[in-house]
Image (cartoon, rainbow, N blue to C red):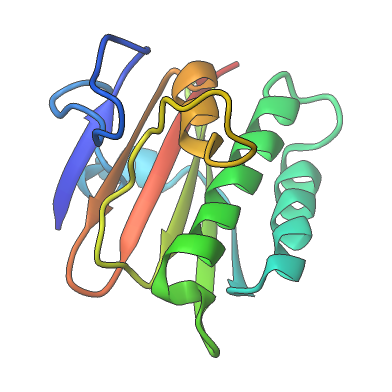
Length: 161
């Protein structure tokens, strides 16, 4: 599975995917000790009405007192919405899987879709009414990235709490 990661915001060209070799490892390359920190997994239909279910899953799993709650819910919502709108998961019968992990003083959220022809791209057009999901992820997450193969793409972000 090809992987790309990104740390804190840096100079980049508009419409370019994140630069590689920054941030943490993609989800499939995590050591077993990190993989053991799975707090929960949710599989939903790739339809707009199920985005709220993903938000509720993250909120309920982390709990109301968690220091990363608001950012995790917001960014998960953005990634699930992107999966519905821009990948094969949004087609009839498509699904999206959300995995929530607890790391040392951090939370990681992974959203896996059924793939697409393109790669995740951060858009710089700030004066348009849509297309700001990955921009928010890039601004708020400690690191983020994606891993993809011919069947699926997993976009993930990590928040330090």
